[in-house]
Structure formats: C-alpha cells, structure tokens
Length: 278
Image (tube, rainbow, N blue to C red; front, side):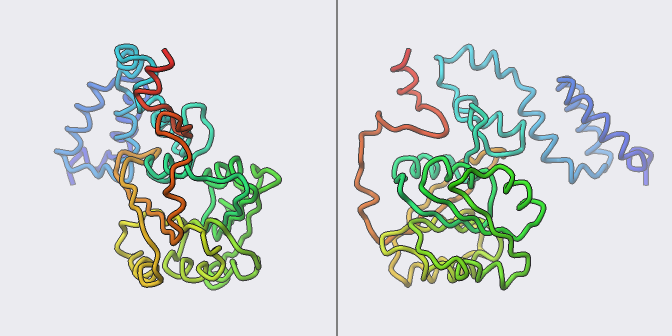
C-alpha cells in the first residue's frame, strides 16, 4: 500500500473541500492523481461527479441562452442535484420518474383519480397535489416517518416492514385504483398483487422498467393484454438515463385533451413555450 492509499480519508476530504469551494481545476487534478495512485474513490464518486456538474458556470450559461430555455434550470434538475431529491425549479416535489414520463402524466392526470403507490417519497406529495386521493405503501420505517409528517389530508401512508405484509398490503385497503405505481421493493410481486385492485380503465406506472430483475411482472402484464409506452430519459437528481413505463388497456388515455403548446408541466416550459412568453 502506498502513502496515497493509506491516506485515503484525508485525500477524499481535500477533494470534497475543493469542490465545495468551487475550485474545480484543482479538484479535478487531485481526483486524477488519486485515481492514478489507486485511491478508492467509491462510494464518494457519484457525489464528486454531481459537485463537478454544479461547479459549472450555470449562471453565465443561462444568461447566454434565451430566457427560460435552459432545461437543466427550468426543469429543476440542477436543484434536484443540490438537494439529492426530485424537485422542480420552485423546489416543489416531483416523482423520481424520467422527465418524459412526468410530462406525459401531467397531460393525462384527472383530479378525481384514486392512486396507490408502492414506495413513497416526493412522488407521494406530487400525486397528492393533483388527484383526489393517494395511498402509499412503505416498508422502510425511517422513510415512512419522514414522509408521513409531510402528507396533506388527501394522502395516507401505511407501513408494512415484513415482505409478505408489504406485498399484500393492497388487499387490506380494500379499494380500487385508477393508478397503481410500482416504485418500491419487490416490484414483480407487488405488480401481481395490485392487478385485482386496478380499475378497468386504470393505468400502471412501472418505474425502472429497464431493470432485468423486473421482467417477470412486465411479461405478465403483456400477457394480460396491457399496452405499454416506455418513457426513456434523464431523471431528477442523477446524470443517467432510465425508463419509466406506463401500462394501460383503455386507449382513451392517448386521446389528447389539448394541443402541445397548451401543455402545463411540473418540470418547466419547453423552449417554444418559454420564447412565446418573452
């Protein structure tokens, strides 16, 4: 083990300090030196990558562009990087879905919907601001406690820490749902358990659908006659591409209620919309 490796905590702390102070050039130099010396950057690598993104001259970049057309600002993506939580430009909660999926849902959501969500978080708050009722099923007690304190009257959250209780928790609620969101643990089992509780014209929002471990439930949904639309793209708080899939049997959700220029989005205006407001 060389001296750089034995001094890993100090090296990583120095890199973090440089990034926090906006000294990007020296931070990058130190990162390169540490990598060449065999210093284990993980599990700090993602945090460092995010801080390098934030250290760009975003104010100058945005000023150079037509007002409101910098997607990374207008969507709230940069703020979500700062907070490590999915938020929009007004720091209001949005789901951890892909941005195209959020925009699609913004265009079809009905105010009288009843929604069930496996997993909870900022998405629970987002649904609560848009639908009649949202019920979340959670198996992480710490997360449950945090979200429960923020819920409005039309939202509720239920804690089931044991696997079987979590999966079958939907049965104890004895209700039908216009939307079932699969975005927590045990997604294959939860999708199967939720099916009998989905309204005939309801939809299933299946996040991280590109994960091969989730294929069993999706193969069943296909056999059950569901159509599927995949929304690939960037997600809040991270730099990578994901897939959020929406399953449905009733194609009426595809009938547009308004033209694209009339779209109201949780995650900012399009370039053309922003330019029209100038």
